[in-house]
Image (cartoon, rainbow, N blue to C red; front, side):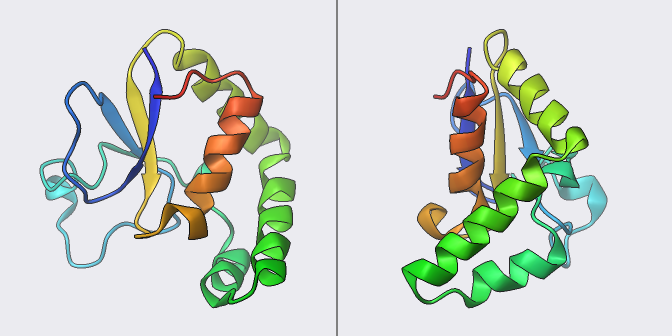
Length: 128
């Protein structure tokens, strides 16, 4: 049992389980009924997505200092009670079931899901 960190829209891995979209917006041009069948996500969970303000900051980051500023702000958002409780829930579930969380970004190292991986590990999640 474990949680995988994935790129939404990529082919599903065997045994990946339920795919959770931790994104601010649904995929453009895709009918809601096709989100799962097109490997986007089964459940939309924007609680763990960065706010619109800092998504823009992450997308514009071109230096390590700019990226680190985004990471700091995202971690502050994830320390809020609702997000913190959600992270703890997912960490606990990862020890009992298989599922995945993800975002659309091509490069995980320049995506909030890299920070999400770290936050889940800090909460004791079992990572695949």
